[in-house]
Figure 1 (cartoon, rainbow, N blue to C red):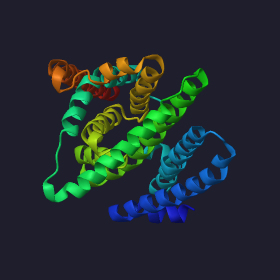
Figure 2 (cartoon, rainbow, N blue to C red; figure 1 turned 90 degrees about the vertical axis):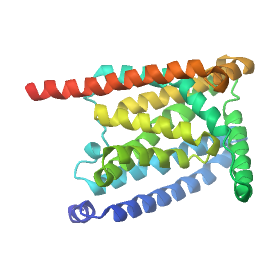
Figure 3 (cartoon, helix red, strand yellow; figure 1 turned 90 degrees about the horizontal axis):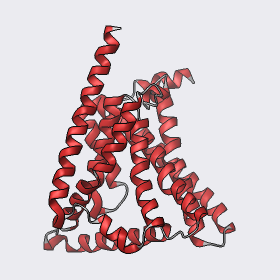
Figure 4 (tube, rainbow, N blue to C red; figure 1 turned 180 degrees about the vertical axis):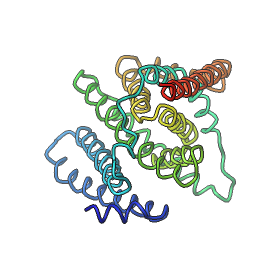
Length: 294
């Protein structure tokens, strides 16, 4: 095993990407097979879909991240930036930023939805809109829970599991792999781009990419993926919670806070988030200076 690790640690960037892709496909195949065997036992289609979602998240992201990290570094936990020594202020700032960013994200999403492709790409645009409609319909079915058990199930399947599994894979594994080759900022934005693209929701591509980049800087500045996991969970849990507790009209009004018709709110959101991100970075630098002094 140590011999294999030594080989993988010296593997080129392209080689590592091939290992990540192969491992991803392998475990997704296993997850799909398990879902096909398990879900027929549930009569409720939506329950089966949620189980499938959970299984694919675990097998598609957690297992590949852990296995590849074990190959790429002697210390897989260090490679994935799973550190519990993170200061509490980082968690607080991450939570504040992701909540305050909602109007800014909605504004970006509103602009994203207005993008029109050239006429010669109309067939691709049609396919993208069909894909978007399918994804939105599936999301609505997931969020249609009316019982407390359904609400808690949605929090686990749509917030908790994706927050940990996606951050472990995209910010822990991919971002680390990219930054080792292309540098910090390029690595953060490349992993954010792939994070957004893999969701196959094209009219939410840019806001999700920006959110992924913010999560990436949380990891870079705090030294751990855990603040980004918390922020990711809060972002997803907010949607789940509002869908459960609020009427549809209220949710619609909330989802449009900061859109093109309410751009001043979005401007304030951008400004406050920028200030908090600056403070996040400054606090990280101060923490490093204090550590060096000691």
